[in-house]
Image (tube, rainbow, N blue to C red; front, side, top):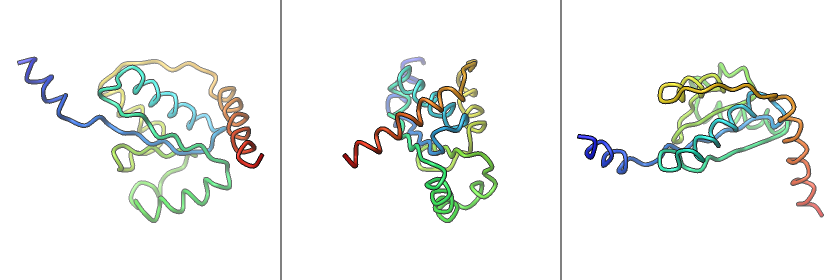
Length: 132
C-alpha cells in the first residue's frame, strides 16, 4: 500500500508558492522563510518559490492589481503580505502557517524585524546595481 501512495505522490505536481509583500515587513519575512525552507527540505513536494519583495509604493499598486484579479479574500487582506498557492490566493502569513501546519509541526522564534532590515538593505542594493 505504501508503494501506491508513493506513486500517487510522484504523479502529483509539487506545490508552488508565491509570496509578495513589503520587504521590511515581519509577516513577509516569516512567509518567505517558511516557503523557502519547505522547498529546501522537501524539493519533491514544493517547487522553488517565487519571492516578490517590494517597497511600500509598489505594494499599494500590487494590492490593487491582485484585488481586481482575485477578488474574494484579497479585499480583507490587512497585512502587507500576500501568499498564493498554485496560482490561487491563499491569504497572509497566518493562512500560510495554518496550511503548512496541516502537514508539519514547527516553531518559529526569530527576530523578523532584524531580518527585514537586512533584507531591505539587500533589496535596495540590487535595485541600485540595475542603474549602475
